[in-house]
Image (tube, rainbow, N blue to C red):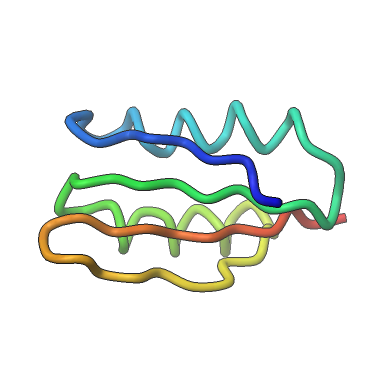
Length: 74
């Protein structure tokens, strides 16, 4: 089961910082799910995953909210 983060109501760079902190707390191969309503979040999380070598599994857009699933890299 993925660890969940609720970053709604927080603007950039806070959602990414929350992901960065949480990813260090899980083992490689485990997943986190983050919900955010910052407009830049979908692009930010994609860039962060590419840079950090963690896998962006999916980003779902639910109205003004995005939910991203990320798998920690090895």
